[in-house]
Length: 226
Image (cartoon, rainbow, N blue to C red; front, side):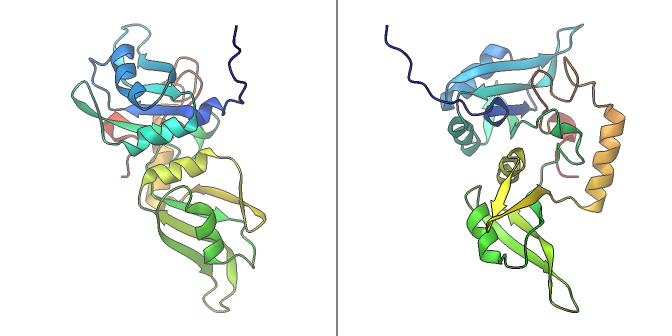
């Protein structure tokens, strides 16, 4: 028997998409039929209420590799069973409790950057994730000295989702901290959402988004910009 070629699988979390705004008619099968056009699915599930078995309006699809996820995201907008749905890269359970984890934003905060890091270093590193619109390296108004952090705005929220799902980023030879850039209002609103929703209501097994990790935004405005 011919053996399958050995290859190291990319982490499941990076291969998973949250699909929000599903029609209540959508089943595991119809979700699979649509999304397998862009690659081989290793898992596909519509989340349902344990008691009533009614769809909760969101689900997850997991591809066999990250490049298939990229293909699917490039093919937006997606329509499943006659309804436009909202695919987003799934947020891990660990990250789903962070402020703004489920918000859709186009800007990132980059912290811990060194004095010798210029705008072009940031642009060179981050442009592989998506089209950059603005890079702002923050400086002190009086002295002109760099303050050790920057903001980068992209033309699409998927670039930001791709970046924050990756744990480590090295720019100009230095590790830096990267997170979604949120306005004060977004921080407050996301904090309220987190408290109101109690964190555990969304899954079989705790954490928003059910088996194996959290969700992105979805129907009803949760996860969209306010």
